[in-house]
Image (cartoon, rainbow, N blue to C red; front, side, top):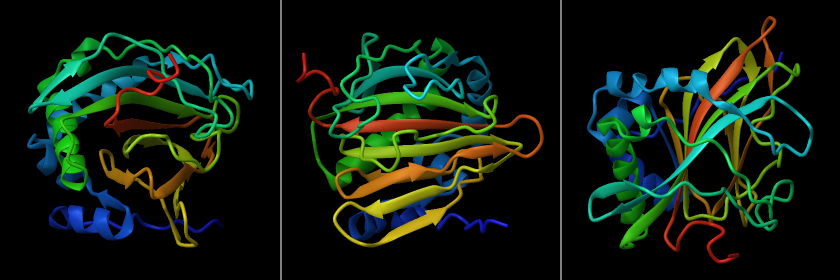
Length: 247
């Protein structure tokens, strides 16, 4: 029997102190909705779009366990605009498995990307990042993921424990269906401390300082024949999208 540790929820009022002191914070779904200023139902209305993700054709381990969509946005002056569709790129310094590759994925469905709840969520998180790091704009990459157990095991982070090469990372659990595993593990980038826990509540959030923290999620296995784990990963970077420098 593998122990499962509950997520260490941070009260919304303590979000900034937690980010400052520990480098990360975990919010429950009710506080995520409150932070975004939207009803919980508005977030849940986006969930069906995870049933229409596309196969990730770039997995170097040959697996077929990951589906995704990817779009980019810019938050500036209190407004969110969608950037022209572009590749996802990371350097090998941050992703030893898939770094240095121009990875193209299908964009998010407009019904999600154009929804008021989506803008409210991203702008609220951008504002939270700006408290820690005031900048004129944030370049945001949004990744919808479904990790499933068609292969018997699914790997949310096949690259292992990593940083993303951005300033802040938000990981939101969207759904867990008939799986075990998928434990979140975070570690100090330059120290010995770490924590492990499992996000189980839809629309709960891990927000972390990417310069200070390394993170990963453990593999998932089906409880019966088939299961999946849906997440939304948002990365916030002040100095342009990754890959702009490489170009």
